Amino acid sequence: MKKQNVLALALKPAMRVTESVGISTMLMLTAALIAMITPSAVSASSPCHAPIATRLVTGLQGAMGSTIGPDGALYVTEGAIGTISRVDPQTGEKTTFASGLPPAIIGIGGAIDVAFIDNTAYVLVTLVNDPLFPSSNVDGIYRVDGPDSFTVVADIGAFNLANPPTIQFPYFIATGLQYALQTYRGGFLVADSHLNRVLRVTLDGEISVLIPFDNIVPTGLAVRGNTVYMAEAGPDPHLPQNGKVVSFGARSPTATEVASDVPFLLDVEFGGGSLYALSHGTVDPNIDPSNAVAYTGAARVHREHRVLRDPHRRDLEDRRRLLSALIRS
Image (cartoon, rainbow, N blue to C red; front, side, top):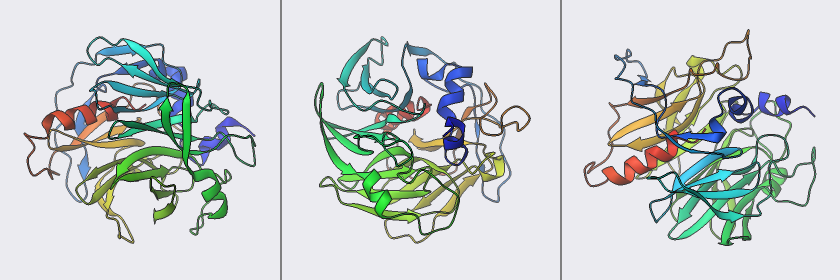
């Protein structure tokens, strides 16, 4: 099995991005450009002034997901080596928070995202066991019990094997590619970029399909109130018209489009009262039909979509969450 084939039907930022611009070894406080997302049925606004990007830390291996912990530090997954690193947001000093997780097997995967409930960290691990590359490891959510101790909370790989997608689209990794972990009502939401659905997972390991999709490649998640916001990368070659942000609720049979026409969206997050989305960049089929051209990515803001009841009171938390979103890839 070729690595490229795995990501051709799912999501492929990690492999080529780390090769071309070294993003897995250099986290940034912001992306190269902030511009306006094109709202549905509304013309685009003028771009905002580009912020200054600041290097925070180097030397990360296969970094993908991140979050701000209860202590205010940045926690980053290093899927290539099965580690969660703690990064001081002021100095960039990196220390090992937890190690010993299953490492990536095929270039993307392993520990791919991390989230906290109260003071306990939970890690999303993916692409470490499948009928195509069998192992004794578990694709799912792990609770961090100590520096090198973990408990599997939910076996998502086993669930996916027993509950394949009901919507028809091409896929071949039966255990899926779980991309994003989002806390939700005392449990979690998990976006599966290969099986095109969002799962709901409780702390006692109960798993259900919250909402299924066609081949739209769901990526990042954010929650505000009772509403879930989700980024869609769109199928290969991730054309701008297929990049969207959508929203849905716990009982929504379908999603509602919030913003569109942004290429290769990887994440969505709130900050300062605005809704931001992270674009991997523009794909040139003549160069690589599956990955964005280097240095074309951007963080984009949909300022019209203000949903915070008290943006001033929540501003610090939102800015921290935004930082986490901007460094995801």
